[in-house]
Image 1 (spheres, one colour):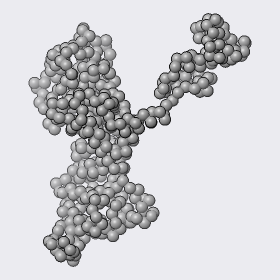
Image 2 (tube, helix red, strand yellow):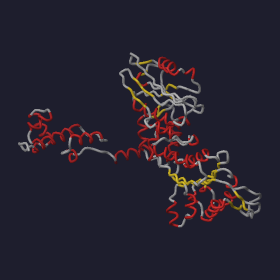
Image 3 (cartoon, helix red, strand yellow):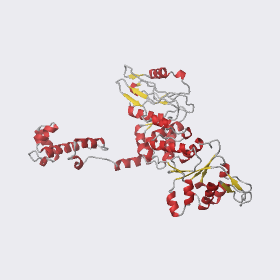
Image 4 (cartoon, helix red, strand yellow):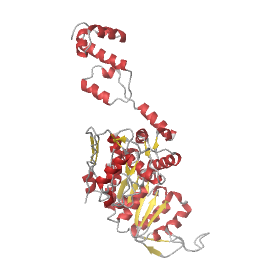
Amino acid sequence: MRIVREIKINNGNKYLNFEAIVSIIRNFFALEDIYNVKILLDIKEKGEIPATIILGYILLNISEVRTLTLILDGNNDLELVAKNVEALLASYINEDNILNNINIYNTYGMVINNKLNDNKVIVQNKPDKAFNKFIGRSNKILDILNLATKSAKSSATVLIRGESGTGKELIAEGIHNASERKKGPFIRVNCAAIPENLIESELFGHEKGSFTGAIKRKLGKFELSNDGTIFLDEIGEMDKNTQAKILRVLQYKEFQRVGGEETIKVDVRVIAATHRNLEEMVKSGEFREDLYYRLNVIPILIPSLKDRSEDIPLLVNHFINKFQKSGEYKQFSKDVMNIFMSYSWKGNVRELENVIERILALNEGDVINIKEIPSYIKEETQKENKSNIKIFTENNFIGASKNEVLNMIQDLDEVLPMKTYEKMIIEKALRKYGSFNAAGKILGLNHKTIAAKAKEFGIEKTVNWRRK
């Protein structure tokens, strides 16, 4: 059963005190009848706060949720509050019982309906709960999770592509946990971390005495993965000799331990991952073409964090809950979130997690401001902003239509001095209407004023004294 509720705050006073807020929310949601729910009021002082910023966020019967937050934005930024709630809701959209309609009412009748317009689509195509560790509800990620959910229904080999830190292992683990093999082992192998002279033994095991130091038989990762899944991370780093043996396992489901003669049969699903361009490696001879096609049965490409920046608020909220200390209720300011949204995140989600953990460990305040952000992040975003600045110039303003000018204003990143715009507007009017009188009537200025302005700006010669 899906729960749809609203909080309607219509108090005659401009402000509600702390106790009134708690009372309203408790009475409305009948919290004594709801278990596994915590409501935390993010208020620095138990004083009066604007009624316009009251927001309810309730999740029902979700035992694994550690912290549920009632967001109160001290700057009356209703838009930011709505975005935060949407992020929180989306982070738990997989749950069956969830509040999916939140309304904020202020004393003047303003309302924000945060209904998650795509909610029905998300519910109909919601990913398997096995992928809950992978945080993201952008369209790109939903498509990927949908594909991964479908792939879990078969034993076909999956090749997961993506930059480092995008979450390839989480997708692999989710596929395993959503499959019929979930009761079997999920074995991770980082091919890049194993020396070339040891990787064969690591994957396929060895017999006692097969090489110096082999004092007893060792079972390899493939053997340990029987009836389960083996995840070969960074498979692009594997040498060609080992590639050939991996190919044999994929083709015949069998292998031999190093130094052994026994052929061992296994039932293992292989999921591989890499950040490298395997197609180019095939062309250069670094990677076997036959193995590439064996691995690339179901390809999954995970976008970089920069390419799914709409998921950043979700991830920030997730990592805040992960790293904040018990009793702490941290939040990031709007300016910080804007910086996070525009930063490139070359290390992807792993870098974001690292940054948030560092900030929370070093910051004692409740609200994280720009000064707490690492300098390299601020420097990059400042350079990016400067390179993308849009300003009006006389050339692109003069001759533009009214709608074009309005569009330019909406797209404006840098505000110029008022006199600059004044000059542009007066010059446009003089060019079009040809005289001080005609231009003045359009602009609501008398002949004397517009003539003085034209002289001040050095554009009096624009007048041709007759209307064209």
